[in-house]
Length: 433
Ligand code: URA
Image (cartoon, rainbow, N blue to C red; front, side, top):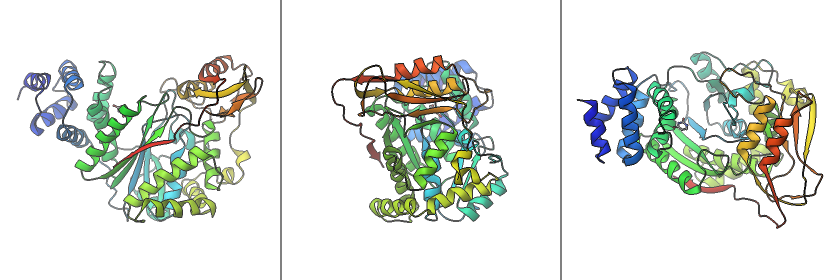
């Protein structure tokens, strides 16, 4: 087989066979196919698209390019969740313990943050001593014992995707639905769960800005999952403003822990219950979504879900007193208010700008090697639809520097205030099964 024939076939709108897709993925991963031919093919895919079958085959080929995590040592139906990335997204810290509280095993492999979105592992490390590196045996043992473990990704998962994603990044081919869907799903499938719930964000702070694009991406991913034998459900949720009121690390853990203690931060609690409900239905613990939602809501009130968070922290060597007394969590030196300059209603909060403002404070990484400052971050006092008066604080910056001018400017540019009353945005736009 010659790579040039695979490229021209796709360029002319043909459907690639399994052999052709594997020839490309294997050859590119082992270095036999050069970057220039791989970029020509990804560009051809960008313009011609892929059928459902081609996309599923590409995904499976990328899974097969590396190691997969064998979770068969964990008893029960393993359900994973994945978010396409948002600002203030601390849903994993709520959903993990919540789902575990009804006996569903959650074996969560997570990553670190880069740019305007934070990483699950970085946020967890706000708790002193909490260890996210562990052997595979300990990871599986913890899930069997406590129904929940969160660890850094181990093993060489989907190396073809790693190489292709880096190539797409510099050849203008990131934004192709089959390539994005295949990329995300290859990593999820290699992580070994039986079923997957995807939280596909939509809006100004999301990878996909329009509802139509987000739904199309969700459909592609659900098709891949179902085609490859994993029940997959996608929740399309709003990212036209940060989720909840806290953006950072320790402050996000605190906000999540409060939900687990029964507090109601409306959007965060609702989305967490939504995702957890689909996860537990997929795990066949509940028959219907409604039944799941009701039972899970009870576990937010009665302390069972919070106890699962405590157990996770203890099992992974973390200082659980920091969650019992949240004043012990890392805190920044200065609280700086950013005030509204007019009266009106908040009509938009650009989530990406808020994420960048938090990164400037040290809550996120501009480059891979930056250190995270767990105590800094942003508290939003006002969200879309809220009335505001001139001089009122829109947000409070938690900063270790007295001068946070760059973050202040960024936050100011993120907020739009109008005279007319504004409706609160819809949180859950669609469910795709
Ligand atoms: N995230 C991924 O992992 N892959 C993509 O292609 C896009 C976003």
